[in-house]
Image (cartoon, rainbow, N blue to C red; front, side, top):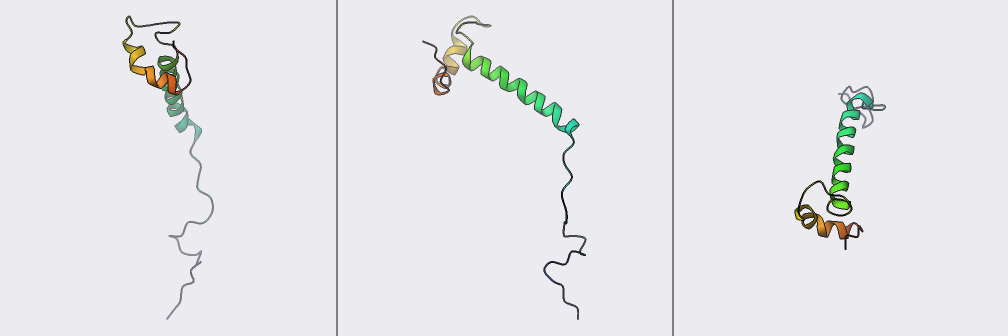
Length: 76
């Protein structure tokens, strides 16, 4: 009868060493998309209906009004 130690590194199901890194070409498109969405959200929260407006009326301003104050952007 053989006994197996708790740290038997010959076992193929026990991972030993470092995991391979994620290639940059797989991360870059998602990072670019996340950055673009973040810039658009920052624009709408900080600037829309303030100094510059893409849409008529105050709908966007009223929608993000509380978030604007929560993040420290003055609007009035």
